[in-house]
Image (cartoon, one colour):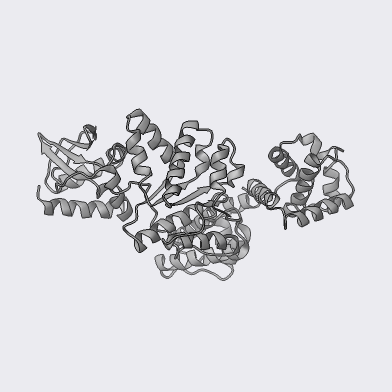
Length: 452
């Protein structure tokens, strides 16, 4: 097969699997040889070969078959080892080139979503600090904080910002080796390296990058060997002044079973909370998404007030919000009707019902007791020691904020306390959250847990 034929196959693969996947997984392949119906590719690492074999070997065979090349098997080789793809009609030929050492090859990370850029990220008060910090890292110059640690609940934009950083760095400084992956992928690669006795290749790959980005780091908690390797990788990169960006669903100090030395390291940079969305931010997100769909569904009418209605009613997270609008436009297009409030309520009845779920005082008491590790009985009991009184005041404050109950009603649920006691507890928490950052973080986490 000629280089021209393989070039056409590569373009077809790029169109089928997307530019980012192509650059991460197909572009680093180099032809090793073709013999007896078996085509061999050189890969930068054993992990790379395993991934391409599982996810893209069928695509490669199909496109090479269409180009007139018949191959019985595809192999992906790293050093003396080989990963064989399942048999089927398949490729031949590929542009031959010398294999590069793992440290010099393209860094195979998780695929980036082309939709997640800074241009598509709607900025509001709940996420403006996280956005500004991410922008600073994406500029590629030296920053005064390392690592950048982003945390928040599901669907608040952590992964979006991490993808946006990687996209921007690729544009601004394409020579940088940027590696983005989830904590689970980090763990998988580490375990595989141990099993394949290629731990030095693993260390070389992860410690040779310019920017390391690890999503959902809470998943390595409790995994002792993985935490050990993560700690040493972290230290090695910081010592080289390489940038690290981490995300999690909670602050470092709140991740259970995460080693204290890792918590300390993660807290030495900039820790930023993406707060739950407010009405203005939800409205901005919906308006941007609606504008996009108007282009996708020309002629489809959107009645006044629909976007505002959704911004008021769906308060869980951005994913639910965007999913609701996607469903609404698709449904209206299929039935050929204008998107009115009546249509919206019919089409999104299940989502709206779920969003109407009311938080109860009993739920608040239970979650607060679990969070502060006290007995539920003490929450409504007479004890006044600070380790019990402060969580009790937190629960009173959240009951006032998250439920429609009056102060006397709340007092009755807290062991028959007077409404003035509830008022005092609420005011005390309001005073403390302006000066006590830990308490403020506790409240944000409890809000997310209760409203999830």
